[in-house]
Length: 378
Image (cartoon, rainbow, N blue to C red; front, top):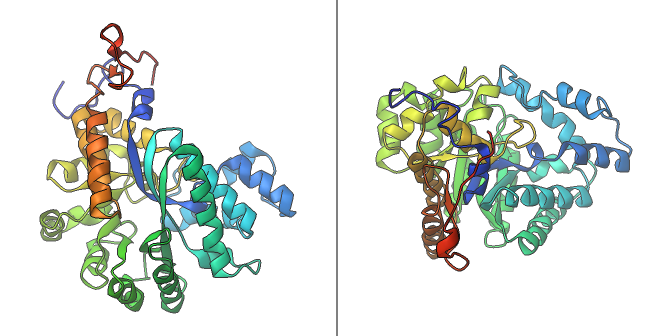
């Protein structure tokens, strides 16, 4: 077996192993990461008609976990999720449940992104939207110990004026749970440069920014995100490999890539996992982070994405650990908070071994039970 052959079923570590690794999720959309049952519950509570009330049929109609062929088709699922996310109680619930689900797979830090303006159809004020989500995240932090912050999004295909309004909201909530600003939505025909004023405002206020780029459009989109809008991280970046000079610029400046492998295949940005550029980027030394994008729409978890990198892209456990650490390094956190978190995570990762054994934490370990093998099938 060559160094880049996928591990055999016998050699590959199981999904359960990856569920126990400490990790983060820097690119996860609130409105794309609900529980399917929650959509049905909220629709019933609010008297909203869905395309189907049958879970299996609704899953099929929303293309959950299925290849859509394009980002535009992929985004159609949000027409369903947004229908039920127009009340404070609904927003609080889905924020709380997202953190609960993430904590269940040992996600320690998560940066949840969404656009408050998409949740005002029922008359909610923007402030009420933000407060409801932050309330759900705070309650989940108390209940599960997971650190969660918010990235507010402008939407490419709505208008620069609305993006500026979202940027103003991010400024108002700086230090109150909002840690960044993003530009999401349909990428093709909606260049980031049109939203320059929004990014100028957030950068003038020393707020971190990330931009979806190089997913449904070429490396020119990534260059605009960096050089026109001043992005500190790049969401997806699948097509960065088409411009070697830009690729090395990003590598030299340690600009993180928020990679979402399964989502990239689902939207057609990458034909299949075997052709995903993540492995190339990692081998070249880029700061690669692995994320979910949309837990519901893509039908995934952080653990599954890391397991895919291992089982489908031939990435070793040391590779996986490096990408996990890169995620924490890339988080929009104060330096000393990040430094402390990195020390803790690095120490914990040392307990996980290539043979699937996991050492007990020092406080509870004994000579008789230092290692616990994992036997479950992937």
